[in-house]
Each structure stands twice: as structure tokens, then as C-alpha cells.
Image (cartoon, rainbow, N blue to C red; front, side, top):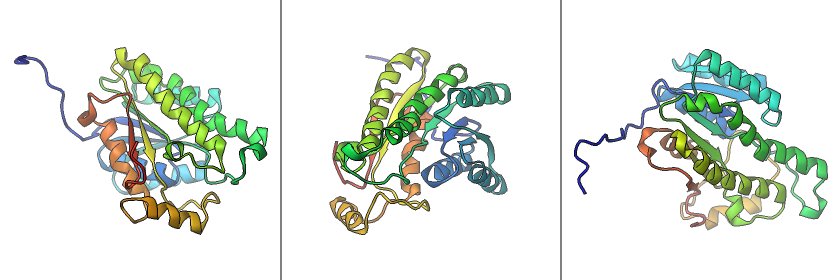
Length: 263
């Protein structure tokens, strides 16, 4: 079948001049996403509940010659999400990329699921699962205003590993993958792509109580690549899914785990 004369999508990986919102962009992997998006020419909108760390990343990017702006955000609060939506609409008129990265993880106390307090379950679900839904809804008009919007929702390979000790986290991240798949169908007619990145164990500057030294060693031994993953190892997958290079990819989950599992 000939496609002569039909338009071809650009395979450019550049995010130049694209407005990209990164939730949880003030630390950890979110900080790495924001910095690399700006280094690639994008406009990083750093959305974080922690103003101190969020503004610090904003200043890092500006000092390096990139473009960034911080805006406070509590993803669990509908009003806060709507305020961010109004801000980006008024300032930029569109959103070209959204990285739903904010999540509760590092502060979780590992315990059997029957010992998880109801209040902790509800708070975690409000941030990890309800948050991406609330914010995507609040940004929808701005995403529709973009000629090639892409949403990347961050799940976790803890879902496919079935790790015990934090069932609510595993359940929330399984929900994120399902949410992405359903969203991709509902937003396809708008030309908005929705994909999931599922990182394996990734070590950042953020201290966490969820992995013991013995567990860390066991996880490294399960990987095909026997080294620790760092935030920079996750960045390429996200930038690819935000760019035109992935223009015909939607509703997919990309596992970035050093070969720990093959799903």
C-alpha cells in the first residue's frame, strides 16, 4: 500500500519549547525529569507540595540556562489541581506534556496489609492514584490545546513483582497503569497520548525505610544489569514518551528495571 504524499510524523526527540508539567518535581526522580526536560529545551513546570525543594530545582534549572517555573501543588486536592490548571493556561495557553510522578513511597513503614491503618491507606491512594486523575482533568483543556500532547504516568515494577510489605502502594501503582490504559482510549480522539513508565528499584537522595540492605542485595541479584539504578536511568524513557519519536505509541507500559523482570 502506497503512502506517497501522506504526511509523516516527525521523529524528532527534542522537547524544545514544549511546556511540560512534572508533579513531585522537587526531589528524587521528579527532579531528574525536570532538569533533563529543561536541558532538552523544554519549559519545566515544577509542581510540588514542598515549596522549598520545588523552588530549589527551579533555580538549578534557571542557573543552568534552562527555562522553569515552580508552582505549589497538592495532587490530592482538587482545588490545588485546578489552581495549577489556571496558572498554566493563563501563562502558556497549553500543556504539551504531563508527567504524573508525585507519590507517597519513601515514608511508608513496611508491614503486613492487615496492619495498614485506614487513614494511611486513604492518604496514599489520594496522592498516588486519585492525584493523576485530578490533575489530568484540571489540565485537560490545556492538553487539548497542544498539537501533540503526551501524558506519562509513573507506575512501579513493584506491581509486577508483587512485593509484600506495602500493599497499598502496590495497589495504587497497579491502578496507575490501568488508569493510563483507559485514559489512552478516552483521549485518543483528541490526539493525546497516554503511557506508563514502571521503574524498578531506583535510588535517589531521598532516604527511605522501605528497603533493607538484605532486600537491596537480593533485588540487585535479580537484575540482568547488576548495578543500582539512579534517577538518570529513568529519564530517557520519559523523554522518549514525551517526544514525537513515540508519536504512534499510546496505552503502553515501559518497564525500566535493568532486566529484573520481563512483563
